[in-house]
Image 1: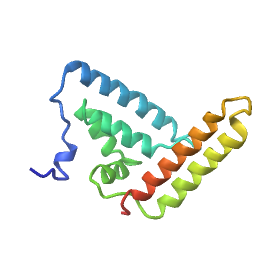
Image 2: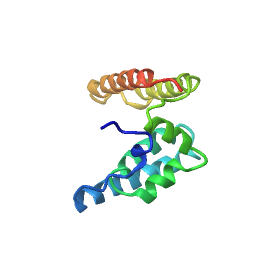
Image 3: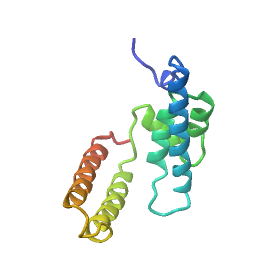
Length: 139
């Protein structure tokens, strides 16, 4: 049976109570950080809300609905969850911002006294993130 765009927005509560609590609190923490990102430059709101929505899709219809119906970022989360992708013009902004912070971390923030693996890991994860963003369909 194929999943429709309507089915993707129905929360799956067919799991243990412990699992639901875990996903709810994970979503709450991620959502809280994402909300801080609205006022703090460099802290991404939409990707964190997408992740929070994924957590709430396993635990709370009320909080999931709040995220996807939010006037500020809900349409982006909804489009992503439905597999429609992200706007083409957003990709250079996302990647540019990410790489500015990654290069700042590698060249300035991570001290030279830190194990070299920390800088290498940061670069590898940024490369994986770049590939992931490029593979998301254009809206």
